[in-house]
Amino acid sequence: MPRGAQSPLISTFVAVGLGVTATLPASADELDREEGVRSATVTIDECLRFIDTVPSAEECWRRTLTVCIDGMPSHGNQLEINFCAYFAREAWEARRAQAYEHALRVAPADARERIVKANQDWGVWKTGFCDHYEPKPGDGSMAPQLFNTCLGRHAAQWTLDLERFAWWYDR
View 1 (spheres, rainbow, N blue to C red):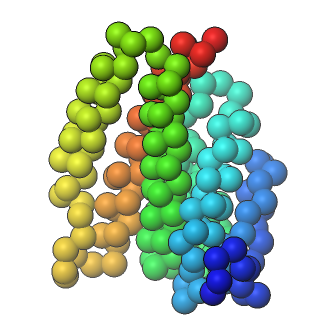
View 2 (cartoon, rainbow, N blue to C red):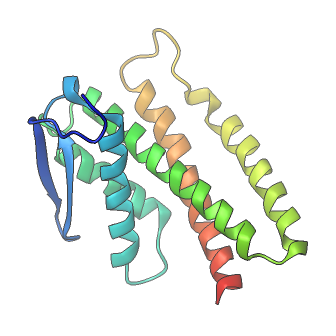
């Protein structure tokens, strides 16, 4: 399918309680990475905007998965859950990269080194922590979900930490 074209099999779903509208392919055969990540990004943005208190990475991670799964044709068979975990992880990783770049731009020079070092340390820790979930042949159908959930949940938390840090220097 050409970049930017919408499949006629796209279904629309609404995140209950959030007022979020996003689209997802109507079947696992039609799953489109770009569209799935875009939908997850919309859900994350809306989740963070509607939380009354300090945003919770865990709560937004769960909402992102729930909205995606509820919008799938089977409402959450294992293949769809695996895709949703992947889409959510990719969306959080993209937001994390933006938060990191923003933190580097707004932080004073003496803090930039610490941000770079903390980000490197976080990457090593996250990878080591989630390695035991990495899918291997014969691991079963839930392995991709567990791996993407591990990486994604940690990316969500680190993203919010970076955003809070940048906020401190932005104000």
